[in-house]
Image 1: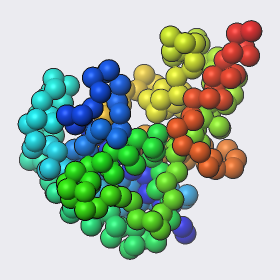
Image 2: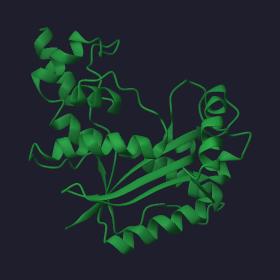
Image 3: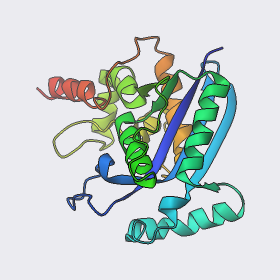
Length: 237
């Protein structure tokens, strides 16, 4: 049975991040990294939940109110061993070992470009430019967002649900965030925890729902909003 990884990150902005209120992955450092090793049958082989000490204990990076408010949650989790505190270099070694040990060829993430760029920026900063890439070249980075966008979200039923439940952007596009898609799938008022491993769990559920549609996997990243937006415009015409 082929095994794959679902991965998520939580990040803090670096000093050169534009102050425009938008997350710029290439200007982020990862402080929380989680992943799940699984297969199409739903078997789970490994869960990892890592606090990246290089970022988490850097007061300059973690000084904003949003991250400061989250720190007690993490500190409690560290005390109960919910999270393992490691350096970024150790996290890199652990991840590469996991990929090799389970023969992983695909790594999935929701809005995968963000996690990829943020992890690359973090490892570049932590190695002072000596290492540039976090992911081994043997793996393919796949976007759950694009897969959900071309399966779950590319239906009139999903778009109408977004319209009826106020899940629309100011520009009139249906929300295709992981939180919204999971609410649709489960019929709940779910709110993301915004901790890496817990978010991996809901993103894995979305991926499994997309796989059940038995449609072609996407080759793109970062385009998960497009098809639902096109349907919404057609319905509103």
